[in-house]
Image 1 (spheres, helix red, strand yellow):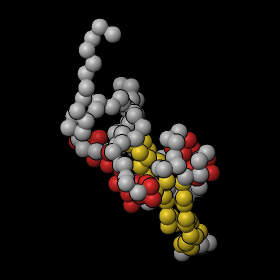
Image 2 (image 1 turned 120 degrees about the vertical axis):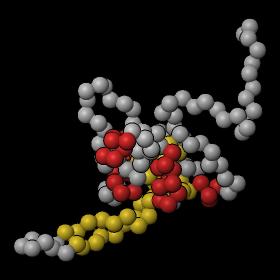
Image 3 (image 1 turned 90 degrees about the horizontal axis):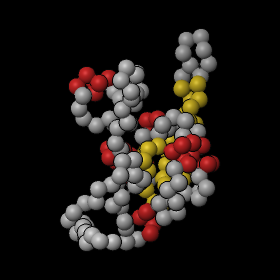
Length: 154
């Protein structure tokens, strides 16, 4: 109470966000197997997933395989309460927190982000925290990043 308050002139001065702050949910589409766990666990039902089944040709002496192909993955951030249950429920590391928070819209319908926009947020996801010395490197880091030590993780 004895100090003067400091006003930061946002948006000219960006705020200092704490590490691992929750902004927007990013989608790493290559890891998504359309298991629907994130949509089922969401308490707000704000995740929309559509898919279709695709039959892969049989290898020699085998039977054909059927896999799900992602058609639509959307999150309605007008409904989302940013609890992170979807990220915790994903067993394949397809969803991540991004620290980006500037995605306000004039129209509430624009707050439904489709998979293309969710994929763009992936570039803002910080790399995983460092392991202890002598521990294995994280699986998420590509081999070329381990040798050069630079660049983004995804």
